[in-house]
Length: 456
Image 1 (cartoon, rainbow, N blue to C red):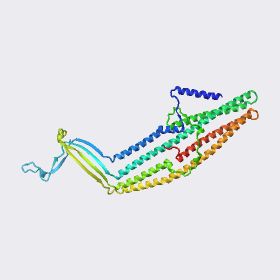
Image 2 (image 1 turned 120 degrees about the horizontal axis):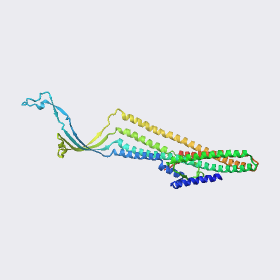
Image 3 (image 1 turned 60 degrees about the horizontal axis):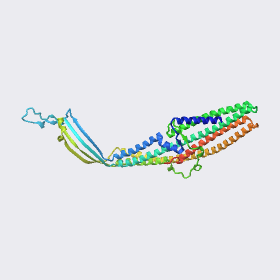
Image 4 (image 1 turned 180 degrees about the vertical axis):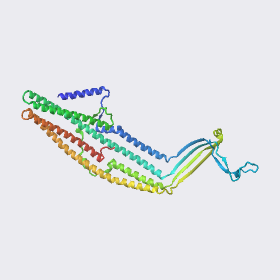
């Protein structure tokens, strides 16, 4: 009774301190709410969704390659060392000029003006490129792959949150049971002490129960710390600050393990996101092979230029609009691949092998899923068998402890029997909750294996 009052006082003190801190009522979460919260707030998932947005932006980047490309430029320069060219001396022959260069020689002549200017607008439009068309399809497929990768990350988070949530439930239930054992053992110790004072029991009986009580208190403290660690793990998996207090609304007794899922029949591999991701990877490999083959197709472009050009030996002249000369050009460009040293040939060979490896991956993945299903089914079956056995053992241990206590109080049993019964009871309880946790983890593993853990 003293322990109950102490625990209640501790809880009320904690609750008063929490409310006084201004945080108000702590948020409460069911398992599904915990998963939903993690899907929205887990930093790693947010980063994965950012990668998905990057993939969508990359589709736009590839699409932009097929839109008109327009650029403008303005170039004004000072030819501070004007380049000269040589002309034959015959161009400058003058019989009346005695200083005319001799025939057979060359005379340096400056053709480059001191200042030049060029203002141009250029544009190009891709008319046909096989690699571009296939690239658009591949970009959309890559976006789909990114979306499925995000779903896979969400499934991973749902699995991690589920296991952490069940861990808290099991530790909380075990902690509550330890508190009940502590109250019962403390009451028994009090009664035995009264019996000792009345000469009915020995001091050794009291000491044995005190040792038992001390051991139980240590176990309670360890369980309390373990429960705090499991709660912190759950907060981490959910993406909640470690200092935030949360309440769990689900009860361990409400958790149901669907035995019908054990050894599922006619399993559809497409239920697994990994299989769907591999299908998309196969599609990408096929598009990559088509892209390599399209390298043999010609490319057709439409090009255009329009602008003004000027030149003068005086800088002030190039600033006058009347000295700028207009020009324009429009035309098409056809690029024909003729011979590249068999580079594309070997690239196509690599693409074919990559596609073949992707298709072989379906067999490996199917075998892996079959093995995972078998292991998860066996694991859950064994866990349920062990759980049922440990539940029966715990019930028997409780009955044995109850009878041993009655026999000792009535003087027909020994205190040693009570101590041994209490020890066996705690061991049975520990084994039961360990089996309960194993069964819950096996349930999550089987749900993951069957692709039913998380659906979007």
